[in-house]
Image 1 (cartoon, rainbow over the protein chains, first blue to last red):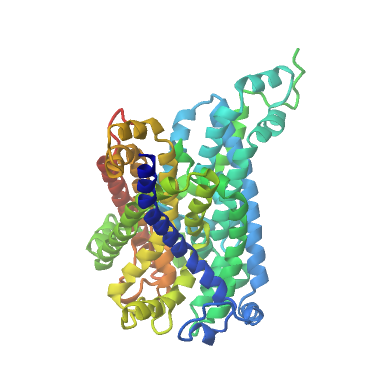
Image 2: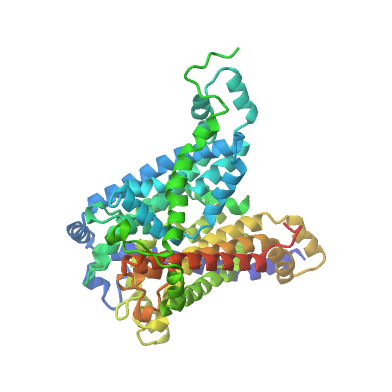
Length: 279
Length: 305
């Protein structure tokens, strides 16, 4: 009986393993070729059959890339914008999330409903108005246009509020107030440390979203020196005779930091990104 | 006793100060632009002419969009792509999640496997799409090379022939978002009480039967959530087709031109901001309608959540 069960499980399992493994291979193969192609010249990439193993043109490709793009500027701006947007988002969303979770104030319910509603607004609704408002503010080709508008994101406020509801005990705040602790000190010294796990998750998500952001820079950035990495890569692709090797090296540069980040934090990241769903 | 508060914020005002950055940013970058875009939808305007060049045209922009061949074509493309990339995410994602759930009992291993599937979701769309455009290349691309070796097929002009453009885009979108759905379903599977299966086993229910009668009904709320996200996401598809097609124009015969791309072109290629605004509101109505329909079709039964 026991043997029967085991064999039944085995028989139903090995095709399952096989399918899962094949799927994983399909997920990983493109990344593998991104790195392989980054080490080959344009002509090698378009050999038949294409190269399946690493070559020795990585340095050439990187040199080529820096000749065609102000790569260090682009990389620097990508880092700068991602960091600035992460810091601002953490600050503003934790403030608002804390207020929505632990305070009573006028229009609280309707305001929160409004925050939730904006999460459902399709991104293309904002495309044209965003350009116009940046034009009016004189923020075209300015990096602040990339990190300020989204710094009070609905998703971030929602995440912070949900977390604060359980992680910040009301009695603790009351007790601190009784002891004469100011409201700012309460937020900075008590609430923020309690929110730390959620801040970590939101920080990761914001950094990655900013690092990958394409539509934002596409609409407001004008000069190549100010481009972030994705837009810079795109601009190189649109020229005729694309330098595939160099472009792949650039794509790899845009991908590697995320892979490292993901390797150290995948569990936290996945949990954060699926919050709304799992409640 | 309380300390005298001279430079102190009273708890009564604290929440307003705490939400003020949100209120300012929300007002300036969300509410105002949205209202302005609504206003603009009834005007004809080229930004190069300055604000005084704005002219009231009534519903002409809406009428134009509704008669515009490309508007409908883009909408059709978008619906096609949303369906062809969205449906497989769930039809493949659900069984895959079940396989992973059943095959890997140790949580660490299961998380790593899910992580592999999740990886495409967090990497840069631009980097990935650029890579795919080389893999899809006609004469020397890896995909054609593999197909030729396996099946002896002629080289396919994936990005140059209208018939192939949409499937090409749909596959990349599917590839990118599959892992996200797998992770959602894995979380839902973990929440199904084990005794349900034990009871079913006692009654002699086979695996297949268990899947149909326990697993699938329990996943219903998550299917609802996942499909809603796919519909919303699919209908605003922009980056993948924009990067895959030459100059972001939507490819041969506009076969890959989605509504979001057409909107972008209308404003930034053709300089018709009024028309583009009207179009964005029409699209908004369509997206809201589609979301509502999905809601109706997949909403969990009352009391089953």
